Image 1 (spheres, rainbow, N blue to C red):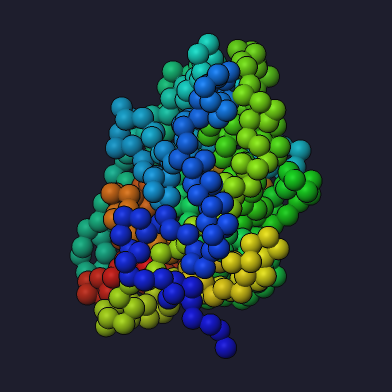
Image 2: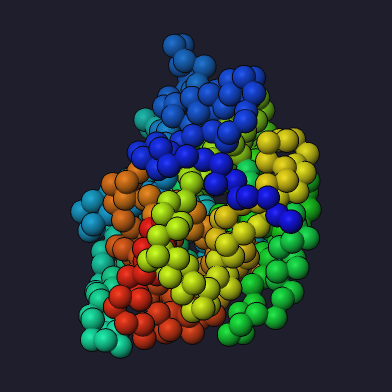
Length: 432
């Protein structure tokens, strides 16, 4: 018999502004100290090397932000700009060219690399600016309600190193960072078994196969919007080098391409700039951020919406419960029943959501099923209601209506619901 879900152990008071920022219950005093060290690194502003006044130097030479928290405010979701004249504050642009790297991953652009870094330290030109504009389209539901959906268009402006030519791009808002340790603790055997299941509507989730830098081998991916990272430590180190230009033992080279001479000549803040102890503290912090508790489980409308969530087929991919196995490093993550509403697999989501940019075994139409826990608190914590990988959805209804590919049958069933039943489903999602 399964134990009560972890979120049931958390109180309703944790559904306020700090709902995404609390440690898992039961941490020891020493674990809480380590959690606090990781939190300090998450919030810390990195400075340009060399610096006499700070050991936390090494920013850049190319970078997007000077802190982690800039893209994950209060550990929650970033947002997309409202228009092309607004800079991406908590959003980034992945880059690649057709083909694969030696390990089967995306092939970096020969001049601009894997990610557009808009800023550079003094003497190092930034790579340019991504300008995002929106195109609207209207869909009509079965009862006549009209919903406007917006689709992003990206333009590369002011390229710092010449015209990029043909380039594949993928815009991504910063995702929430709580509950990641619990997701890492779900056994690979569980995910593989889910992938083998014959599921409703022909849904067939797949494990992405990605490269582990630490172990020098291909492994199952589970982190990142296309499940392109094998574990939490590599996810953290990858974000540090990609977003802040901070090197680590996993990624010891500065984020400069061979043609970026000024970048390559810039001073470093150490070798590496992020120590293994700091990387471990950051990873511990992300691993032990608690998912928020659910609310209003017993109200009739939420219970009706939960039943609809299953009957429409949404739970086919957004699996309500998973169970963690014994974790080799973090005992507090072991043997938990969790309610993340994901299968951690990649699925074909159709042409509407496609970015056209493959990432290992995940194709241009594929995305990892995002966890839904905490989705009802985005507006409370982050003061906006944007959803999906690029923030195009301005509310839950728009997010559902963008689902295509394997999710199209479930989306169409939602579109045929009467208004009060649609509202029940949305009330359930807001309770998560």
